[in-house]
Amino acid sequence: MKIGLFVPCYIDAFYPGVGIATLELLERLGQDVTYPQEQTCCGQPMTNAGCVSDSAAAEALFVRLFAGFDAIVMPSGSCTHHVRAHFDAIEQTDAVRHVRAHTYELVEFLHDVLKVRDFPWAEFPHTVGLHNSCSSLRALRTASMSELGEPAFSKPMTLLSGVKGIRFATPARPDECCGFGGTFSVSEEAVSARMGLDKVRDHHQAGAEYIVSADSSCMMHQRGCAERAGVNIRFIHIAEILNGARQ
Image (cartoon, rainbow, N blue to C red; front, side, top):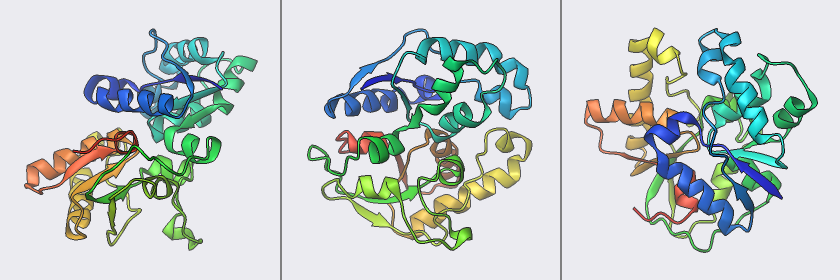
């Protein structure tokens, strides 16, 4: 399978280690991965702000770079959801439709497409609390939603269970929003900050040493809330754990 790796702009700028871990992990699993050097942004920030037409150039570049791949994989639920559901600023050509149909978030690609369950090189002897972003949970359906009262499932938990030594903390409200929400954290700053602090405290009180997530954007928000409030908890992307990080 020929895979195109997309590293979201905020990860490239602030958390490049997440992009590196994603590349290394896919290569460990025997995949043929290419990182197009011209990539920039998927256009999500503009669309989230209501400036849909301003996303056109970013979307067009994305399609030009990734239309030739069998799968496009990215370590971000919100960017994946944007490509699939909101890539509407450009003409819907065959190439655009191909990109929209073959873009995957890392967890679902590992779980659903490659069907990986064991990571023999990975060991993480820490207690972690799992945070699923709203995009991953309610748009990509990588885990069950409590408000639906459905049978419990969790694709990221299934993957993490294949890591030696890892332990799991269970927060009281495991699928509650952390308050980031892109522009929401700007337009509703006080509410967003309180939601983030509540989320961090919930994990900390459950005994988590780390909060792990497939979305660095949520963790960036929560990290800021934790540091300001003096909550002693650390953060790590799921790609880093699955790739063998032992912090």
